[in-house]
Length: 122
Image (cartoon, rainbow, N blue to C red; front, side):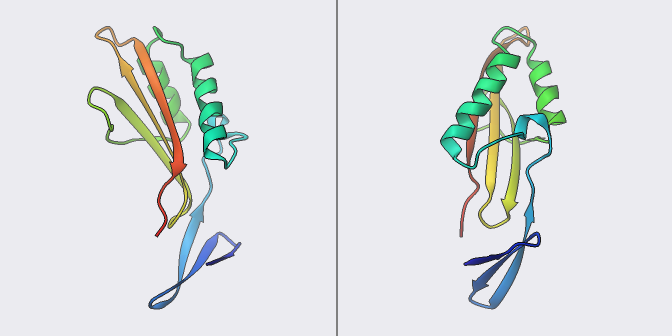
């Protein structure tokens, strides 16, 4: 596999060469300085969200912020949670960010979870 760095990724496949577009990460403060190392990135994002949205605050504020940062609603992996996702990089093997959170019956933030990972390689 090799890359053609003009916004496309060139892959040799069973039917010849296939071009896959590359998309950048959202250009927002949440993604600023995000390392490609998934563990370090997950820790950085968790720290950023912990400082800005501590437990007990309005869960709607977290949701509104994440949507403004370029994430999109997606199905939650755990019942009772809300989830947003962003996917960028190569369409075949890019980066993915999932942020999930729980709110209590008064819509106060109980907890959040950050998962920063590889979106899957063929």
